[in-house]
Length: 154
Image 1 (tube, rainbow, N blue to C red):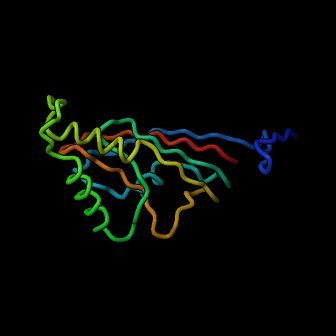
Image 2: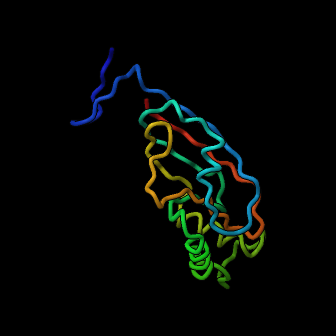
Image 3: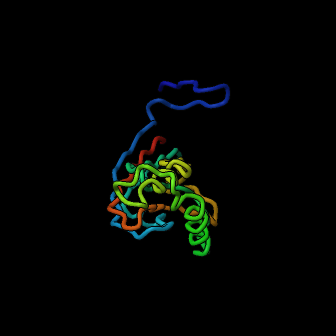
């Protein structure tokens, strides 16, 4: 058995490390912040991981991913309102040939981010009781969205 020292405090067994990667596709969603935790878990199989790290990466520049409140849908409505107030309908945008919602979508995607990292414990995401994964659609009429999920662990 080979052990490798990663830092002063962490040791891993090299022969126990495994990886998993899958690209999932979300059907088109309306503009807004959508709770997709269960949808993600239905499309992947990470049940063989006792411990690990999962990265979710969205392959688009007009949508984003984040982690936030999973219980009260008004949080998602308020998130949409805030980002719309902050980013939409600016007279100085020059990137408008794909529509008035395109440049604001790029800005929102940059502000929120294209990836999230989550701990994996006992075959599932180790989230707080009130946390959920959001797919944030920033276009008025979004298309299907692809997300790559990579898990490294044992």
